[in-house]
Image 1 (cartoon, rainbow, N blue to C red):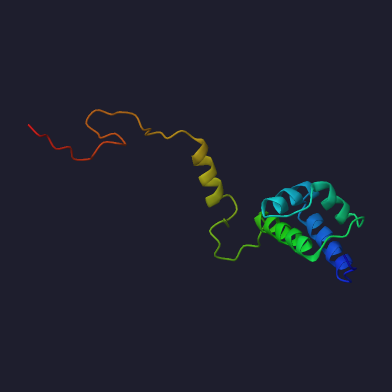
Image 2 (image 1 turned 30 degrees about the horizontal axis):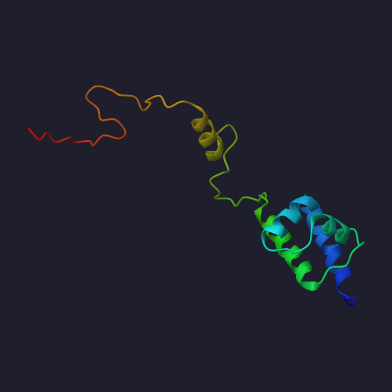
Length: 129
């Protein structure tokens, strides 16, 4: 395997991307392996430390695996003025309201009430008498 002049910079930028996304080499390797990567976790760690050279296809698979993981990381965003998540001081945001209602039991409940259909019963039952 010959020396690729792009490898050191590719490695440096991969390490920087992993650090910025707070991803571990183990997380990278697991995703890399799941998409068909051909070297072990130990070799990936050695590559990231600059102790081992990898062929371009394996480096590109590492980049693909890293990019998939980075895209999956939730990010904060700056809201626009009409964002429904914004509220005026003293008001509950839509997100807070949804979170609170998901934690509180439903006052109506899904229990049987005489004269009212249950959740799995038709609203207008027809008698076949």
